[in-house]
Amino acid sequence: MSLRPGRATTARRAALGLAATALALTALPAGAVPARAAAPDPLARYHHQLLTWKSCLLGPDDATGKELEQAGARCADVTVPLDYADPGGRTITVAISRIRATDTAHRVGPLLLNGGGPGGQTIGDPPWVHKAMKNVGRRYDVVGVDPRFVGRSTPLDCRWPTGSAFRGAGHDRAGFDRIAAFSADLARRCRAHAGDVLPFATTRNTARDMDIVRAALGERKISYLGYSYGSYLGQVYATMFPGRTDRVVLDGVIDPDRYGPRLLRHVGAANRHALEGWASWTAARDTRYGLGRTRGAVLASVERIQAAAARTPLRLGAYRVDEHMAPIVLFNGLSQDNDSAYADFAHGVQDMLRAANGQRVTPSPWLAGVLEFELTGADSQYGSVQTAILCGDMAAPHDPEVYRRDVRRARTQDPLFGPVTANLNACAFWDRPRERPTTVRDDLPALLVNATGDPRTTYEGATAVHHKWRSSRLVTLRGADQHAVFGVYGSRCADAAVNAYLATGRLPATDITCSAPAR
Image 1 (cartoon, rainbow, N blue to C red):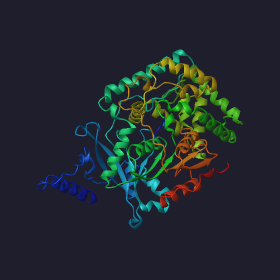
Image 2: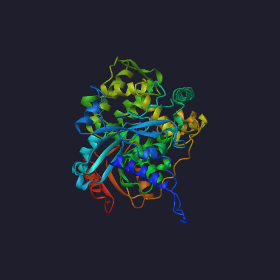
Image 3: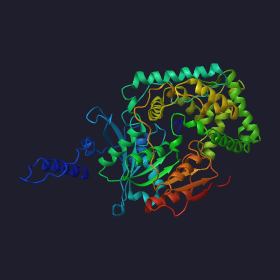
Image 4: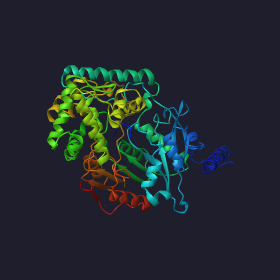
């Protein structure tokens, strides 16, 4: 999960469908016993639709389109029903991109991608995933899918003044009440601006859309690579459509028993561990960042920032960062375990500490990006869709007092992140979901990938799914506080394990453990 966003067969199939219909209308010979008629497919017009492949470039400033063009990708829109209970009713479109297989003699089929979120765009991912796959990529059609309401698909936008529904609860009852009112307002905006589509923003409907994409591509099965929330989507798809998956890789694995609107409740300890790892890295570079010469000193600087924000909002350029926002900014800095990400985060904390000391500050590029995401409506669509899916998949408690008690307990364990991970969000004020949550299947021969220190989808989630899916294998990246591994972190060991599975379709004989390089 991510709080902030970071790619002639059909015609023949349609003709065969018409021929079958004509044949079914032919009278039977006298005395013949009629065979049991196959039930008509209510989704036939979606399954047999003709896709129009076109340039992915939307204009001269479309960086994603340029990357797709350079990689040889083409794009198409797939029509799906808004409401699968009413397939003859209103339709929406799901945008896809595809880099076709070039080794057609050894072609495996399509590899559908989901980059997580929920609410994250994936249409731009095929170029870098194709590159990470090395020679194996030539054997796949690598397909990026922007899920319903995301990116280039039919949009859902609640017109929020923020890109995220998550906030810290603050240090007292007044602060908690402010965030409860903020969350209720987000829910109200969604009903006002997207109420007609809101009930249909769910993982189950996204999985149904995936199966329409599969059929429209003319394929009996798909392979799948899902990161973070995409791991949950993959589990739901494999459950709803058994027998339609080939090779499945889930990277950053969500335990379905812990999935839901309060997903963050289970990541507090992992984020504290990641913060401490970054603090050690920063302390070793005190001459550059001036945040402290020891891990404890750096963490004390972080605590000073939160204490100052609780007294008076920090002034960072045009933005004001209060006690509700300061821990969210810090939370956003903890997902990637590499020197570049650590440096960006250190510069951001440096800026916040200066503001806490009363200095006028122009935020660094990383911090400016986080503040724009959190404190303006620039990414309203992302937050709207993310929240709609989380709330639409599973009901959350509607009594604010449940959350207030949880925040009070969590604060005693971690005063910084506890009021974030245990806090309420807009789902506390949402309508009840239309469908029951998916009971994920008991087993799937999938390849699971996770870092031991992943602060978003914790390693415990991967081991829980591995325990349930006895035929799965787990690739562990040990010693990294990293969210998403394959093609992202740079582990030759982990990347090789994934590519070997994608190449052969055979899972490793045993689980694999890879080690992060020592710093």
